[in-house]
Image (cartoon, rainbow, N blue to C red; front, side, top):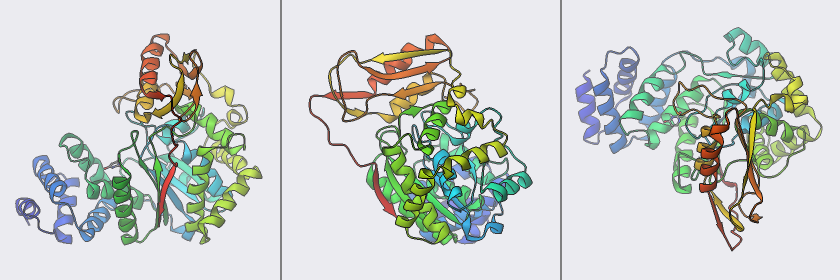
Length: 433
Ligand code: URA
């Protein structure tokens, strides 16, 4: 088999065989195929697209290109969640303890933040002592003991995706639905959970800018997940505004704790109930409505917050910081951004607010950057609220005062205001099963 012929076949609109796709993935991992041939095929796939069978085969080949996590000891109870990335998205910190308190098992690998989006692993590292790296044995034993273990992605999980994603990033081939699907789903398949709930974000702060694109991506991922033998559903949710009020790692842990203690309600709580409801529906074989009710019950009884403390303590974290979240707030300077305008906030550019948080030190411009876990933004009034000149719009936290003004300017430029109260868009656009 020759890579040249495979590239030419796809270039001309042909459908690749399973053997050809496996040859491509194997040669990518063992470095027998040079980067220029891999890139040429990626571009042909980007332009010509891929059939469902091709995407399933590619996903499976990528999933099994390195280490995989074996969760079969948990039977049907293992459940994972994946968000396509957003600003202020701390839902994993909230839904994992809810779902575990209700009887399912969340043994999951999470990512780090890059650019304007945050990552669960960074947020967890804001809890002193929390170990984001465990041996396989520790990871599985912890999941057996308390039904949650959340770690960073292990070194050799889906090496094919690492290589392909790095090449897509520099060859303008990221934004292809089959390639995004195979990239995300290969990692989910390798991570081992029987059940998967996807939170596909749409809007200014998301990868998919329109509801139509988000829905196409979600439908494809559902097909691929089912094709690979997983139970799967997807929520399509709005990322035209940040999720909740906190953006930044320690600040988001504080907000997650407040939700689990029943002190914060609103949109963040609602989306967490829906995600947890879907996860419980798949793992416990109940209806999503029953799952949602169960989720609300374990928050109301305090069981979900107790589960979070048990999990964090077992994983080496200082659980007293969850009882007293002021211990997490380590930044030396803060600054209230006052409104220069009067009127309704009509829109908030989530990406801009994510960048403001990054400018404060809470996010990474490049993978190598070191982040300030205490830095970030607590958002005040949001879309639909009326503000007067001089009202506080948000509070910024940083460790270096010189970072405050550029971040304040970015925050202000991310808001739009007007005289008419805007119609607020629903947070959950659609649930696909
Ligand atoms: N996230 C991924 O993991 N892969 C993609 O291709 C896009 C987003």
